[in-house]
Amino acid sequence: MIRRFRPYFKYLGAVRGPIAIAIGSGFLYGAASGAGLPLLVKYVFPRIFGPGNEAVPLLHVILVAAYIPLIFALRALSGYLNSYFTQLAGVRVLEALRLDYFRRLQALPLSFVQGNQTGDLMSRGLSDTQQLQFTLTLVANDGIKQPATLISALAAVTYLAFTAQGAGLALICLAVVPLTVFPIRFVGRKVIKRAAQMQSQLGDVSSRLSENLSAAREVRAFGLEERESSRFAAACRALITSQMKIVKYAQALTPAIEVISAAGIAVTLVYAYRSGLQLETFIALITALYSSYEPVKKLGALNNELKRGSAALDRLEMVLNEPITIADPAEPARVDRLLGDIAFDRVSFAYKSDVPVLRDVSVVIPAGTVCALVGPSGAGKSTFANLVPRFFEVAAGRVTIDAIDVRAMRLADLRRNIAVVAQEPVLFNDTIYANILIGRPARSEPVDPVAERAAVEQAARDAFAHDFIATLPNGYDTVVGERGTSLSGGQRQRIALARAFLRNAPILILDEATSALDGDSEAAVQLALKKLMSGKTVLIIAHRFSTIRDATKILVFERGQIVSTGSHGELYSGSPLYKSLYDRQSHGVLQPAL
Image (tube, rainbow, N blue to C red; front, side):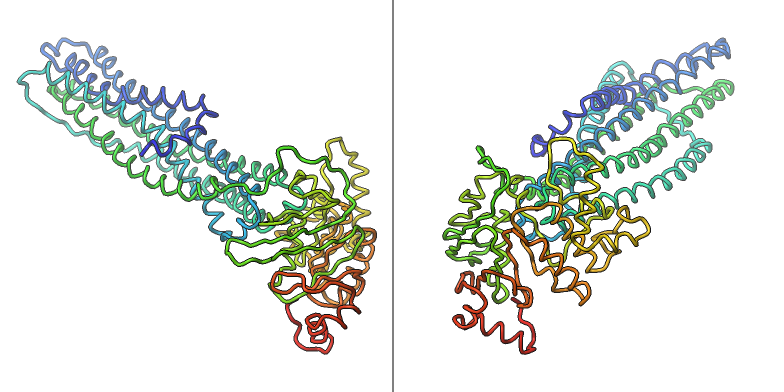
């Protein structure tokens, strides 16, 4: 069973120091528990309860009795160090697991993210990584400590069985020291308080992951993979701090109780001497046998935990082993700013099913063309547009920009030349300034913050967003809330347009950017769009015909193919499908899904 987890022990390499301390403390704990206690009973007690004990001075008895809390303190300290450093290594392993899982999600294509439930992906990234971390650290902890305890105890049993001949057995039970209630109450209060903090931090981690998954297209379109990974790493580090505060108090409880109990045993031993009681030496043998029971029980529990960890690992490997089908080429073409000549050469595409979404599509869209994509729902319009920034990989044929296959470009170079404005833009739970700034293409050279601020504000003015931003309490530093819920639909749309203005890419993809707006908001957005589209190659995924008046080229899609191409006048007279769709809208019939 442990062999199943062997490839993942690589995560322990980064925490060699804490693991070394944990293992060393585990061996010391095992020796003190398995052999130390029985031998203490065998060789210390006889000095007090042996023949002629009446002549033993009281001070000597007290000093001998002090060995008991000393041994228990050694056992408690080593156990605490073992548990604490194992947990420290464990939470760092958990951070590494979650970051690897998160980075894998950033690299996987949109088809994978869209093909799985968000909640399930979150559960795998949070709960299953937690389970795997617990299993790995339990193996590293009890896989050392419990066998050491068992071997030491069995060695003591063997030794005592051969050295003690024909003696009787007497077992004296000692009551638990009432003082142990004080550390229990103290630690309980601390753990309750820290647990609330940890749950809050865990909620932040979940929020980061959920937000990223819901904005998968925007992250890829604006090249935010590393930015999002850094933000997620910061949330994970905050969670680790809260977790270790709980560990600090919770793991101190058992050692504290053991030390107090050991002190009680020492007091009882002194009382026994003063009362003239005798203690049989074979209690050492019983102690050794008792010491061998606990590790056997825990090793059985470890086997059950390995099974639970194996199930969690199966779920995680569904993501970790998923092939990355969209990646940078080994030798990418050198790309700076593209002109925007788009060509589809016999392109076919299908999602996971065998039903093709696009079939043998060929079309040329010259630079500077405003091209509208129309057709019934499911005809392939959105898929066509999504192949340009390489959100998906073509099954056959090729997509080129300026005669360069998009698969020959670095993803960052390709997507830097494309701006995407969605029908329902996603804003991150950050300031308005930060939400506009993500439209800025990545730069290697240092950026002047004053010039950068001016560029963001100019982009907002171009998008007719500056005026409403200025009326907000904190202006550009206003936090918009998760998915921009504190703003209206029109305001969110203008923030998205400001991103596109700031990006100033030669290719613009618009997914019906005004379909869900009221009249006033639509008028402002339309003005901004006209300015934004100037001089660019524009793909408009049209859901209503009022948005394609300025299109210089219209592609009519049906069942995954382009069935007609031309201007509005040409298509209205020459394409029955286009005429039918246009007439249905213009005569007030229920708007079809175009």
